[in-house]
Image (tube, rainbow, N blue to C red; front, side, top):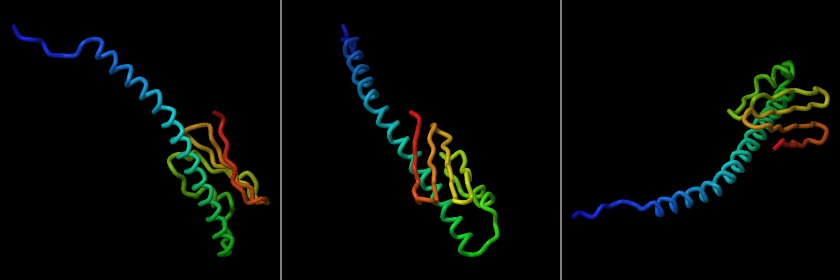
Length: 117
């Protein structure tokens, strides 16, 4: 008589439990890395837009700030960059992935990012 080969039910359950534990550890880390990537993309996009505004001012171009901001390059994570105020310049970059935004205020020269999660 041939001996059947295969896994027992107990062995399969142990493997499933181990996979579930690993997934339970990996998913929160993935979400943390994704959030950090979105924040980095928004910061980069808003800094690029600030640089484009500075170049426009230094070269004496008479392009409106709205046109400059509307033509600023955006990453796949950035939904939009909005000019909130022209004097002083205030910009807001909004994420399309999570409820996440970064704001630039020319008064203090800082970029602040926040999220609602």
